[in-house]
Image (tube, rainbow, N blue to C red; front, side):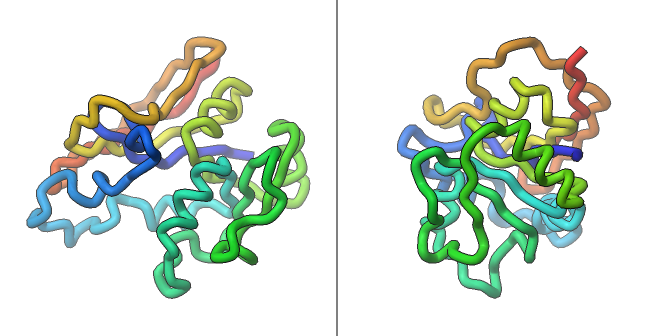
Length: 187
């Protein structure tokens, strides 16, 4: 099964403030930029390419805190799995949308592949790092917001090995966000 990352960071590589906040994503960049050609910077195209999502518990809790109305739910009807060794039920507002899972990540990926899933969206800093350490991420799309946070939760934690990123494809958006897509090579 193909595993892909699609995530935004500050220009200095943080995915959230020290307290987990991501409000800066909505204030960074040029607010008056003409984004009519690609208003969501490729997210819809990406989400249409995946058939399941695996996220960490903290990522799930951030999404839950947004309390997104059903008509604005960005993940369509894809199956979402949240990794947690402590929670067995998702927050009430994510019931029916998220299934909690625990245990070995390799086993989970194998189970999902056996169920017929072909492409997983991997989200959440610690989860992404775990998948990279297991050599499971195939491609990454990282969108850098034009803001320096100076501190916060980094996209990557401690890696067990060097990881080559290849085949860079980049785009600069009118709002000053820059997106780079890479293939991941573990050799």
